Image 1 (cartoon, rainbow, N blue to C red):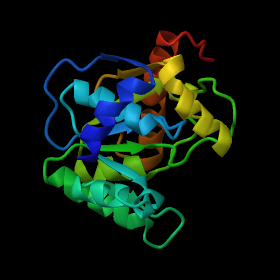
Image 2 (cartoon, rainbow, N blue to C red; image 1 turned 90 degrees about the vertical axis):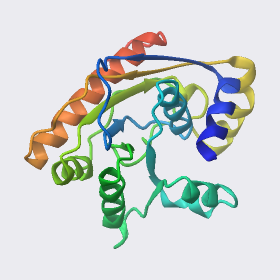
Image 3 (spheres, rainbow, N blue to C red; image 1 turned 45 degrees about the vertical axis):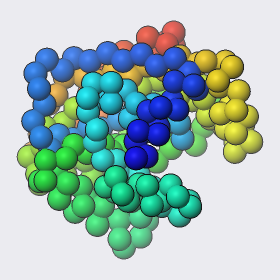
Length: 217
């Protein structure tokens, strides 16, 4: 399975630590929302969640499904392609709602895209899109904020820099940290729910950034 391959390979690219504020067993069909700042962070976040015996399906850019072998593996594991800026974009939320109704956890990225900056520093999450709040409202799912830092030390910048960073990461062993905040119910109103989710993820991100020696602003 793709998720197992990710989990097996991630330790070779850096040191991963995980902390959590979750006190009780999460109900089936829980939403996880994380900050998104690197091509490497889905692998880091998935590996961290697996340590806590959590295996969500991931909402990810549909371009990944065009990669030979990877696309088939993603489909086999039930991950959800997001066709951004197309008429099919809303179908991803329908698929996520179906997965939640079936008892699967779902991981999505509130920002909906990678940042445009090229440096490797940790920076607070950018504004969230409304999809998370609308999905939580439609399904009644509990939301767990996930903050992570350090993945940009594996891969960030131009395509050439990302490749170089990935190839040298096993030698550099950058420290990546993932922090799970306390679960919450988002406000029913979309704008307020979106703001509450971003605030919670930002707080979790600050904890992660401090853990890797960053000084979050």
